[in-house]
Image (cartoon, rainbow, N blue to C red; front, side):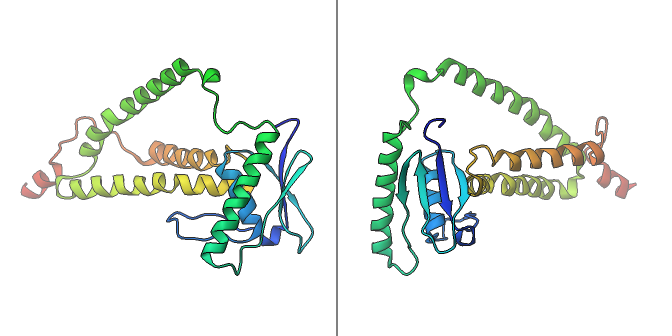
Length: 214
């Protein structure tokens, strides 16, 4: 990365946010094609504005891999040119010394297992009291609905994470740009939880029903 930095040179006006949560969008502009191809290979890159009308290029050190104009091509022709571009890009990255995959001999497997185990412990520490806390928080008449809404709303935030992270990566070239979304959601949850979630210890689980009977 130091000796052969990767740069995508393109007209900024032809670049679009590649947010595609349902996998239905087609990105056929040369800038989008170039950024998407580099991002799919997991290679960080810098963006450089090119002159209007100039075809987007991927610069790998001194080597240059030009993108292609995909607008107006039928699906078969676009697929064929996209595959050829991907092959040329991968070959240029390999010539520059970028590995196709992580080297097993350089992977600290024991540390990865330790980190995953530690994360699992933290998840268990949060999940174990969460069910009891939510059961004490909502009255019996709406408890099931409240549980379902809470978990589904959280699922929307988590479900969009891959699409948002990939869009942030393609827009910035920074592998870690998507972490800002996760950090932002956690910060909001921390603030809302700290300010508005009540202490429920000792609260009657059927308190609303008992109050109405009384």
